[in-house]
Amino acid sequence: MKLSLVIMAAGLGTRYGGNKQVDAIGPHGEILMEYSIHDALRAGFGKVVFIIKPEMGKMMEDLCGYLSRRTALDGSPVEVEYAYQDFSSIPAPIPEGRTRPFGTVHALLCAAEAVREPCCVINADDFYGFDAYRIMAQALRRLPEAGHAAMVGYLLKNTASLHGTVTRGICVQQDGFLRGVRETRNIQLYSDGTLRDLGADRPLDPDAVVSMNFWGFMPSIFPILRRDFEDFLRTAGDDLRAERLLPEMVDSQLREGGLRVSLLSSASQWFGMTYREDREAVAQALRRLHERGEYPESLRS
Image (cartoon, rainbow, N blue to C red; front, side):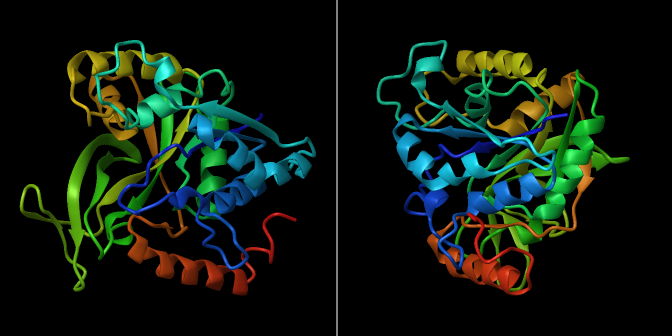
């Protein structure tokens, strides 16, 4: 069974202060999504779909052209496809002055024509670790086609930043299944390890499980995404900042009984760069992984 890795790489990265998706952060100039591709291929994925802005096409081909020389675990060539996230696919008038994307639900919808197999959907600017891809590949091969999905969760305390607030989907779980996702903005980590939801002025459990956009979906997710996004557009109106996020869509489907989502645990450590001040810690962590032999000297050979 072919599995696709779908990388959402069209985000703006505004808090980071630049295009962090293509920041050469690894010890040999690797970008974070190259670690995701490397880990996914050795976990058994055989196809990579990049969701990008149209102007990023040549840059991405230059960065990841070496994938045309790669083979999957079954010996077949790795397939690569590009999907473009822009306003041309929005089934409604675009509010005047709107420049930002409409969120991750729309991003994944833009890949509908390219994804014809079970897929793992990730952020381009996060490091998830090999074990996450291994257990997701196993889950995708077992999932029924309709009405089922999977998610790898991470601990809140390992996903926040000392350098500013973050938004995380805090999960409600029961018996190995996701029961709800509460999208929580303005989460602040403090140097003593405590966390607060600044919007509600309340403490948060450091060991709460959160969504970091590591989703496993079957192709049957696309009609669900389309209905959800069309409903969102009807209520968003002229709000120039409104966006529909995958955790919000999943939470809505859980409440309506439209999805049953397996919550997977991984031994891998997540890390990422929300703010530019996070960069050095990520660079050091990647350097240690190479030094321990968990990654080869070059991911591109």
